Length: 214
Image 1 (cartoon, rainbow, N blue to C red):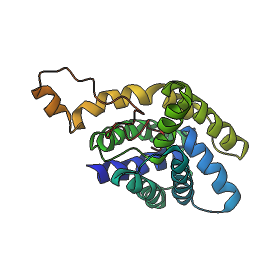
Image 2 (image 1 turned 90 degrees about the horizontal axis):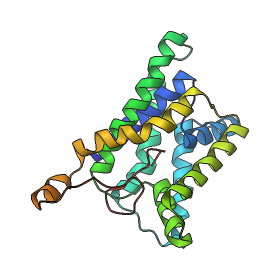
Image 3 (image 1 turned 90 degrees about the vertical axis):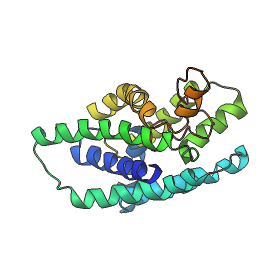
Image 4 (image 1 turned 60 degrees about the vertical axis):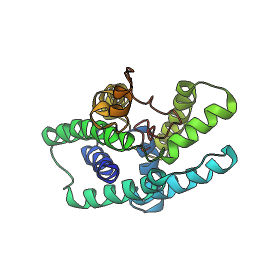
């Protein structure tokens, strides 16, 4: 479930790239860097993930299997999917690509968060900064994503209606899909406790992503 979720996450990003209607904040940054380096966007995602993972060291964060897998597999899946998807499609096709990419991202997030193998590199950075600074997860997340979005936009990354739709819908989508895949849910239910599922971005073993490239 972990690896299928990560592969589908990369594919969801590729659908949004092909739509040309706006990316999530981290992919705006990845695309902007790709424009200036000539590297594939998935390859940039891998390199940025590795750099972010180094930022865990001063925060005393510890990666898990899901963390390392996230760095490698999401970007690789994005590159493979982009190679298979034709470009230059008409708007009538690109709109479903955008919408399908966002929904698929929610599904994929539910799968790999629910697998509970450790947070993605970007979310580990968020939770680590929140813990060290004493700020709320929401504030730290918004600050990080606005920063990478602004830098990516200045570098030429695509910001559009897809960016806005992603921002307002990904939380509800993950909230919907996560209970379907959360591997800890049966144990909590057996204990007679109501479980809301892991909070997005919390440092518990299952909180792999805020659905922003994890």
